[in-house]
Image (cartoon, rainbow, N blue to C red; front, side, top):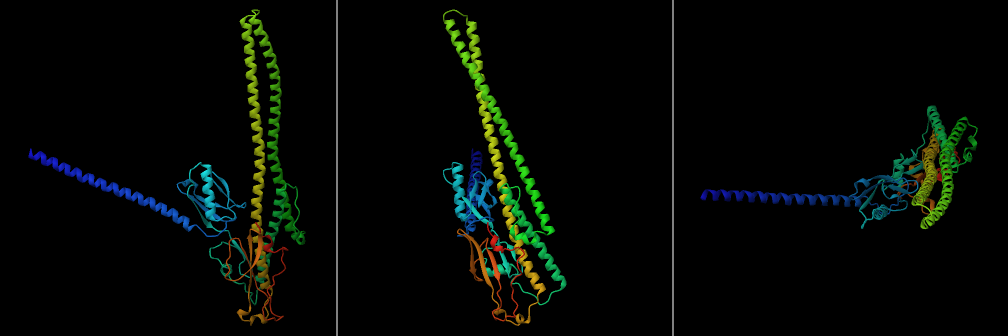
Length: 454
């Protein structure tokens, strides 16, 4: 009995050791899972903290990243459209212009709660991936459009644009030719954008032709400009014809459906008259049958006829309902086609406006380069100290009250969408022979800031 007892005790000891190790592994696994969950929550919270820019108001051109906790299919990058809204699954387009990212996140969460019938809104994080750009023009080396960076000041913007523009004392004939060629190319780009913009505006109003912008009056007889105008007129004619053809298709379908409804309605009226006659005949036959003046077969035949006519009447009513639904769907499709066409044109209009602004900036830069290449500065300016020349800065900023021009200092903040204008006045020495930096007369007849609108 002693040996089996010792074996039993050894088995119990081994079993106890195995159970204790399993318990340790279970506790370790549970702790590791809790750690992962807390780390995920911490990452999500840190993303919310990192993505919040206090006081920054969203507008068209901003690129955002949306994350919804435990909704992985909802995550992604989106752009604020020209209408100031962002498009999201389930909830559609959500207004974003003029909101902070935290307010937009709250709105998205509430819309998800309502659309999905949730008791509590989900956790939504919105962060800024890319700010809308800023523009700089005037007395800088490379005017144009640049990506915005947080903490941007006027002086940093000038640095990004290559610093202040400096005219050289001499220029070769090759540089003059190059400057004139660049100016001509950029002027053609601006002219093309102006004509395209006029065509788009006419197409939105469904006009058959467009007016040539007054800014192009001095160039109207140029062969290049005439070719651009004819091309845009051909595009306008083709687009209007295609749009009208699509609308006509839906209208023809609607007319066919209307005629079908009318035919069914007349047939229903005929069946109704037939039903009334049959009901009268059935009533007479039932009366005769009650008096024993006719047989049961006659009654059955009349009842069957009455049932067939009633079924036909119901089928016609159903067919009319279906045809009316089809008519409504065709009319709705036609309206949606019109709305989509207008939206596409407005997007093209915004893109063309941006291209026009950029072309005007390039024209202004080309004018300055040509001025520097053709005119050598007199000796009066060469001997001046650098500190005697000052720059004036102006910010063109879009606000809730409209577009405003703000006088600025080098350390003033530049916001996304701003236009920074750098101007160098005539040297403060008052020497009438000193070399000024007034730009050449504009080839477009308008300032860039006049068209920096959304």
